[in-house]
Length: 341
Ligand code: ADP
Ligand code: MG
Image 1 (cartoon, rainbow, N blue to C red):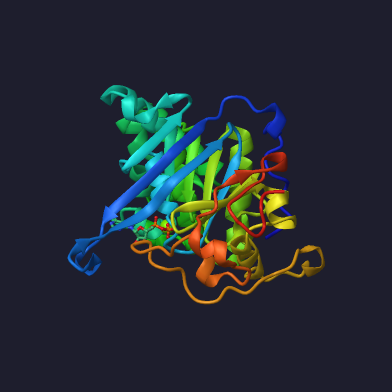
Image 2: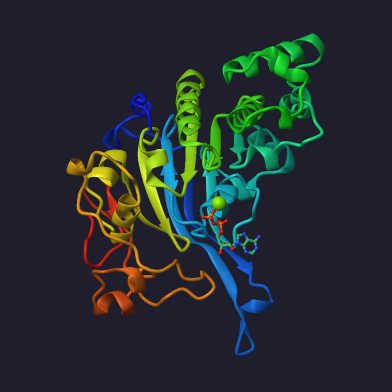
């Protein structure tokens, strides 16, 4: 990534933390498995998210990283209440989302927005940019007429696009420009919190850096809080204040950005770091290569779900599931072999 600025400096340190903007408590989501999910007459389910706890502070970027299928998008959608949890709760600004009435939920929805991975799939190909960006302004009755036009132009300028984009269709833009439009659409309703679900995964590396820098600038200007999802640790390195690593529906490690990159504990985190092509190998801790693929969340391994792929696995790892234990500086890890520092 480019020599981007440091993550948002306004975020308080762990010792000076106040109330979180987002709090997730014991959150789980099971999907019924399809016809393939019947073994010996028992219907299985997919535990996409399995007992997740986390907090996101105002103004912070929490990076959420894991292989495809680890449950990142499901967790993001649960937090936005686009999915109902099987168990557990989500608190936004101190309020339990499950207890809100319709009108309260509508107001809260405006404060939480989603930016998708594939801006082409998520932008209606027949809608002009004016309508795409203006839709939320209309739904939430934020402006009309000339005022709305001005606001759309202002939003486009904020994401580095000119006002003449308004009369054009999504296919007339490059991938990076379409993602800028997707971001403008999300910002149109003045949100406080964005779930960015792999917002740069579909883009060329050079364009990725531009979009990440834009997101960082917008965060500072608009005092936004981000959950930034990626399958690659490289992508979230510069923007994250903290990073959570997800494996088979669970957080296996969560710590400040520097702790994750310079003092990773979990072998899965180290394997993800190994996958980053980097020139700065001298400052990286020991890398490990990850054998095999992630098992199906329909039938997760016993004990530590990572043990079949882990070069350090001992007997205890196959039998007993490690707890996510918090150590020094809030660095939490679930591993029998490399416990929290
Ligand atoms: P990620 O975003 O990390 O790639 P997802 O949250 O999309 O992971 O998916 C986690 C698991 O849940 C996967 O095994 C996926 O197949 C399953 N899953 C996600 N959504 C559904 C759904 N609507 N119905 C059934 N299974 C689902
Ligand atoms: Mg996903």
